[in-house]
Length: 174
Image (cartoon, rainbow, N blue to C red; front, side):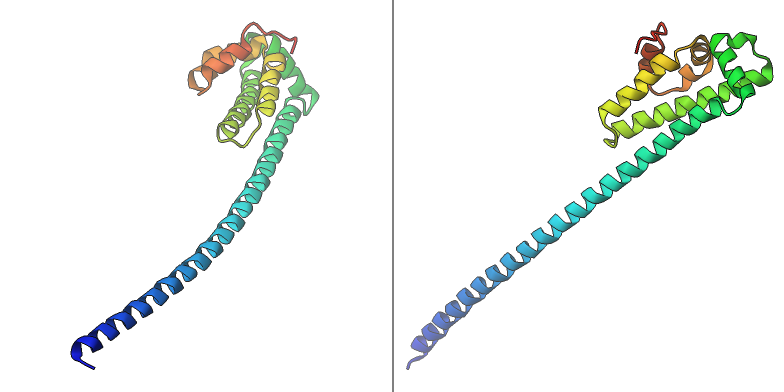
């Protein structure tokens, strides 16, 4: 066997080994891609489950804040009286009662803002946001709230135009 024949035989053998290596590499990559896909699917399911749990927890917390807010406005007869008088005529409240009333209203605007932020982040359905907006329009569109809104909160609140429209004329029809 001549040197040229030996070189040709080694070249052919090298191509054969290279072809087997390419097939082996492709099989390995196919297995890896399949495993990566399964892992990605599992991670996606896990993230979706975590998102659902986080959403449920946030809804619970927001609902709890909303309930606490309602309770604090009527936690005792004196507070309820301050709140009722403030809703009608905030100017008729003394300095201390006005601050109590103002703190309750500020808490409501904070909760309202949180609902809008959660909706913007995709954690709340539009129907829940509509409920909160309807609640503001029907139950919080009072003379006292509008006065505080115009004096203080409206200059600070990020959704000013939206709340301006909700407080509007105090339509209580829902």
